[in-house]
Every structure is written in structure tokens, then in C-alpha cells.
Length: 142
Image 1 (spheres, rainbow, N blue to C red):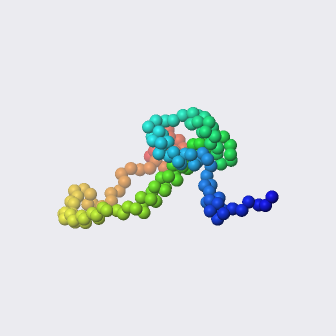
Image 2 (cartoon, helix red, strand yellow; image 1 turned 120 degrees about the vertical axis):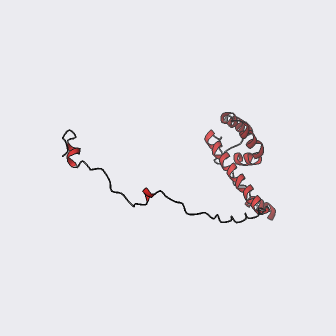
Image 3 (cartoon, helix red, strand yellow; image 1 turned 90 degrees about the vertical axis):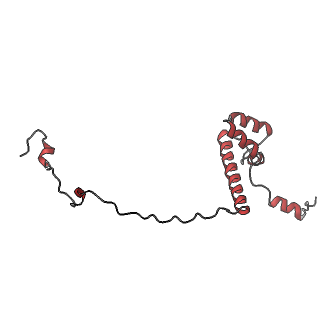
């Protein structure tokens, strides 16, 4: 039997095929609905896994997804979607805010301090107990 010849379009379609799992692709394709549902209330991941299994969705290892696997996949989908939207909005929009006007300088007089603070540093008025007070706190100091 002669080998099947692929056209250039078929070859390119295989070369640029999505490298994500079917679970990732399904979550990405239904991102809007899933994100809205997650924002409204907390969803039961066990029920979601049951639904994913009923639909025949598999993880990257072609296994039935676990709760942790589905949560991690959803986190990747959310991050990728937010990043792609951030890139799209940054390319299409430019900041239209005008810079703020400069703040005029405030003229004020220097603050005056009471005389008691102008004397400079004062000497401490306490005495340390020395090493004897640490060793035997019942002995009197001279």
C-alpha cells in the first residue's frame, strides 16, 4: 500500500495543532460562561469533574481529570485569557489621560520650637545597677 500523501494545508494544520489538552481547550472555549459562573457562586468541582467525564474530556496525559488537575487547568486558562486580553487592550488602546498640572510651591515660615528643646542633648538622669544587680537582685546598691 502506498503511503498517504499529505497536502501542504494538511501538514500545516497538523504542525499548528493546539498543544493543550482537550480539557484546557474546552475550558478556554467556554471561558466566558465558566468565569461568570465562578464569579456568581462557588461551584462544586466534583460535579464539574463528573460533567467533564461525561463529555469525554481528558487531561494532557489522556486520563480522566482529577479535581486538582481541573483546578490547575482552570487557573492556567484564566491566566492565559487575562494575559491575552491585557496584550490586546494594550495594543489597541492608548492612554488618553493628560498629565497632572504641577503643584505650586507652598510658602511657609520655619517652625518655632520652645526653648526647652534648643538646649541640645541632655544627660541621662539614671544610674545603671551594674552587674551585681543582675546576679543578686536582693542586694542593695550603694
